[in-house]
Length: 319
Ligand code: ASP
Image (cartoon, rainbow, N blue to C red; front, side, top):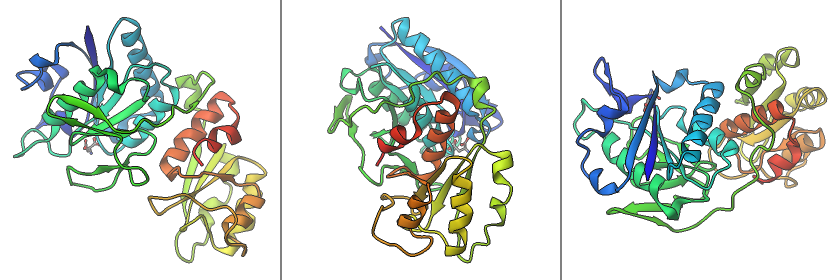
């Protein structure tokens, strides 16, 4: 049996001015011969992850689907870490297969002392081949930790321990050559409709982070250019009182999802009641983003708008 490897670029592939291919990344990798699976490589992109698009990622997921249909035990995708949490979540929403779809990368490029790419890639390949990792959707493997795509975050700009799941912790570990899954999150429905890459390009969803003494000027005219909005509010989901009617009016014209800018935890629903509080905003028609961080909420909203899925039901799964 084989395991499929798709490469999209990023730090893991940056050897000075040269961009490493999948063959380069797997050449002479310690531990690979013992994997017992041939690695079938497709080099798709050699770009910083800032240049990846949702449409391109849907194409990669489609190619990954074809690989498992052709018999691959699982799939690994390597890419830059900057947008990896968003890519993995997008893939998780549309990945229907029991086979693992594993994202990884590196924080230290191959020209530095102690590059983390080879260890991350080997661990990701082990997870992708493992029966223990089936039915878990898309995963992120970094530093021999296994994270569910729907909870993982990049939390540090340079540390190799950047990927954490603040609300849950890792769901498993790679120890020696063994994949050990400690907890199995329920698979959620994801996005039911068929998200066409070209359709996604026409859906514009804004992310607005509320800050101290916020004037809200950027929100003016937003409904003319965007089909949806995610608000990263203070704490448990608050905004200045002056912004509450602005967001309420926008919510009559487009879906507006309320999340927290804090990086962990959920918004609340009925603890505070002043203008601009979570209770006020939810009453004005904003959608409860639950435990979703703003970046993932934006990915979900965009896909839902492209597929005409039931928005409320889809977001309720994350609350
Ligand atoms: N800037 C790089 C990227 O996301 C960082 C990385 O790969 O870790 O492409």
